[in-house]
Image (cartoon, rainbow, N blue to C red; front, side):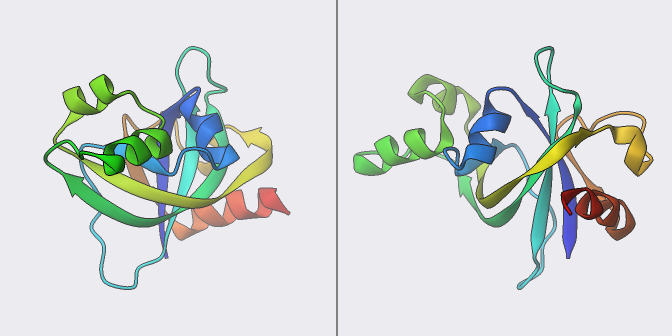
Amino acid sequence: MINILLSVRRPFSEKILSGEKRWELRKNVPRLKKGDSVTLWLYESGKDGKRAIIGKCRMVSYVYMRHMPFGKALGLFIKDACVSKTRLRTYLPCYAWGVQDPVRLPAAVPLSDIGLTRPPQSWQYITNEQAAILERRLA
């Protein structure tokens, strides 16, 4: 099991947790082996965010995007990534992380509760012990 703490700004954090956003755009991806299970813990960042861990989802795939999709694929991707065509074009090349099964934590969890003092700029691995603390908060 791989656990990742992912910094996400509002409103995208809410869109992931609602299931509306199914692709998250990032410049790189974790090192994965075939069959790895990845849990993404969502840290809500930004001036309007809670600045705490607010939920989790599963990373089920990723796709390297070098060029803009076209035709129907472009429309579907923009809808499922909750980004504009302009934003996508300016962010390429990038990886699209497929996310599913969002779960909101009953209460936001400060980073200090898992022994961290600052959030990741984009994402970082967390230990199984840190993830276990977060899992207990779901109960």
